[in-house]
Image 1: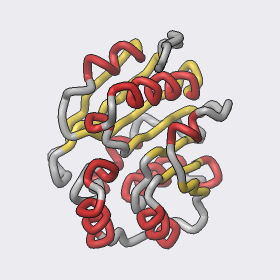
Image 2 (image 1 turned 135 degrees about the vertical axis):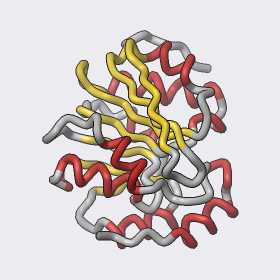
Image 3 (image 1 turned 90 degrees about the horizontal axis):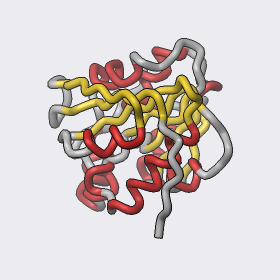
Image 4 (image 1 turned 180 degrees about the vertical axis):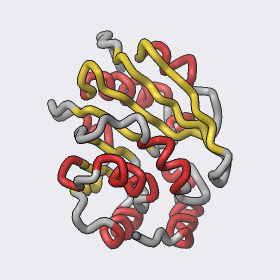
Length: 187
């Protein structure tokens, strides 16, 4: 089992708290909660992969690293990710750019701190996520508050909240299904 270096993660948080969004990697218990809605054998896009703490739960669920693509913005976290998961395809870059590619997935799993993202970028991201999910796909996002609940309901017909106290800090996993394909205009 990969080892996740919390020191690397914490250093990146101190250097860029808005980009990283959490002081510690997601716990394996929370990662398993997030991965549970993924269809067996499904294709998965993981955005905000960090050092790979959520990746472990995803791989336990799907069993095949070739069905997973992970994206991480921070090159230092990406380097740690590659040590932990050398067989997973990792893209270093902005998830928004990757979501613009016309590829659909059974599940999109997010470790991105949406609540601290500028509203216009967050809206573009949610719009792109709905376009990249298959009609029966699922979007799961870890957050540390309930502030995104109302907004996610604008993009999905079903939004459920799962709490995970076994995380530092305690987390909320939004499980979203039924993507609404509504054209949005962005400035």
